[in-house]
Image 1: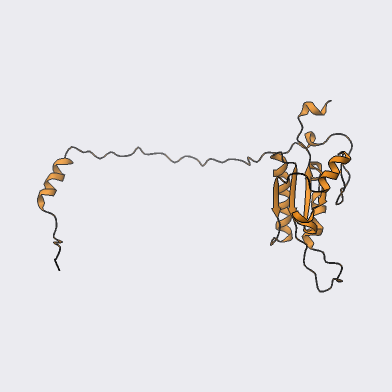
Image 2: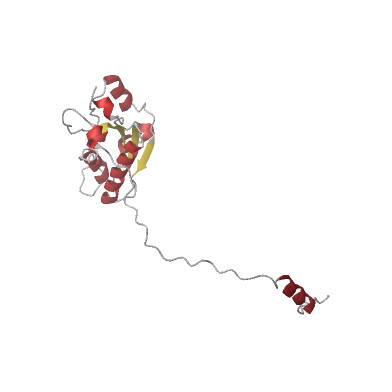
Length: 187
């Protein structure tokens, strides 16, 4: 077996290097004075509720109710024939987390000009005290109430139980209003 020579390189290399860098001067970076931190406010788009809905006040919606849409559109919506543009799955969330998620999801979907969204609530777990035919989940029962809150209700035309292919009893379709320009409201 041959031994490799691990001795330092010859001094000639040091001389070559010294000759190469003899005219090199160290450049000092310009000192930057610390500036005040840049503070950016909330840049989330805001919903102009005055532009969302005009006319009479809004009534509370129950599951499968509609607000100001024609029968053909309502039937198509209830049969799950609208394209689902966004989905939110609430499985594994606490009630408070689910509430915040639904609020953000609906508002963001409206701002992104989505029309039909799906909220997956799950069917819920039976409690020991429930009668066998009363299997209701806390979140499943709460979502319709959340959709009727003053921040969300003006954005919603209807919500309906999903068809079995989209989650059935464990999911809700939500039909959002179209965003209208101020000029459209005066006509």
